Image (tube, rainbow, N blue to C red; front, side, top):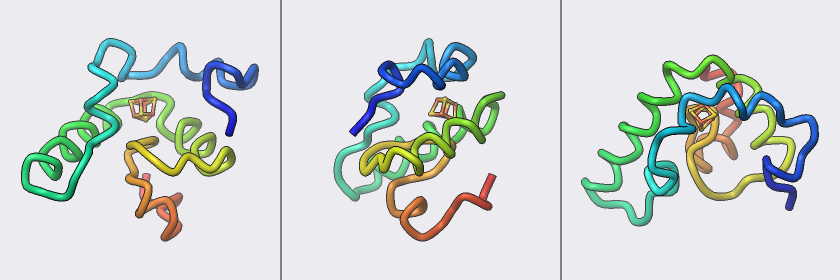
Length: 85
Ligand code: SF4
């Protein structure tokens, strides 16, 4: 799997709204209420991100199976959430 840092086409990352956020926020663990709250918080950051489309495209293209990317969870990406943002 390619990471964003290894992908030369990932210059969009420099404009990410999450650069100053705790990375753990975007990798929630579990299914409980706290996790759902964390997902909502991460999605709120993505909602104001100028490169959300590029982020989502990258996550789908590189098969990211964990984390919030482009305002979507892994499950949402698997279900074809590309049209969500
Ligand atoms: S869409 Fe979300 S995860 Fe992707 S770069 Fe923007 S803030 Fe970060």
